[in-house]
Image (cartoon, rainbow, N blue to C red; front, side, top):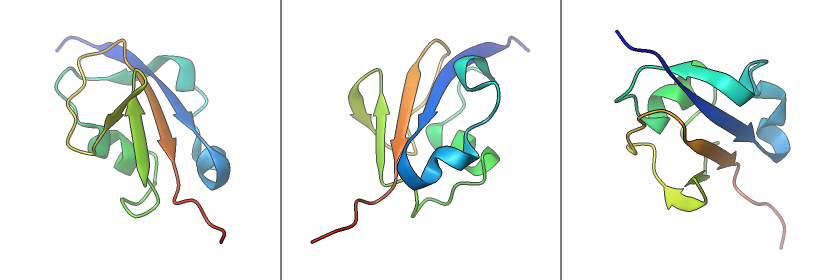
Length: 78
């Protein structure tokens, strides 16, 4: 099976869950953002905002490799 890579950025309270290989995180083409989120130990509720190459995505977004993924937790405050 061919291996691809994505760049993963976790922000705010999710940052400690960033993998060491966040710049070249290995994936299988066809994986979803949700699968990566679960691999990293982030719950669906914690991954409130997802951006793929700067465009809003969802946990169901399919990845092919080469994407930049940014994941933000829910924003607190008043």
